[in-house]
Image (tube, rainbow, N blue to C red):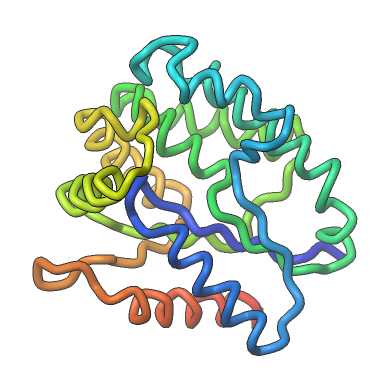
Length: 222
């Protein structure tokens, strides 16, 4: 009996980490057994190429490593995680909550391609990770729809507080393309879009968290 895999997805600066924390805290309070997954696993050897890529050792711009090669870096880290850490739990019916997954390749690597090439890339990506590698398909992908101007403002605040920006976060034009790729992937792949802005302002985190939780509850009831 397979478990349930829920993915929180979004562009950099969309508030995924905050929402993942609020979600896992609520599941814990309510006594719901689950395991949390976060990708990439920066402290694991399987993420070595990802760290080199994001650190600028393979080029100083995201486009210096093409979409297919960079996607393979992240896919290797995911399959290592699955085989080492959570396959048995998933196959026994457990609930997994992931911050980022194959869906992040759809966004961040799909952004490197012209719009006309993204559909073929998404087909290749799903075949690579879900069919050839055998990773589970998510039961629900919640895409946090945060417009780029708000994303840039949140990233500026994080950097002013001392966070170090990777090559993705340093490239505003690339972030704009990521948002377009995310919107395209959400429509093509059936992700659930959760608006993070209302009337020109960012919604309170607690309000977004409530909507996310309601969506997850519906998925778990099926």
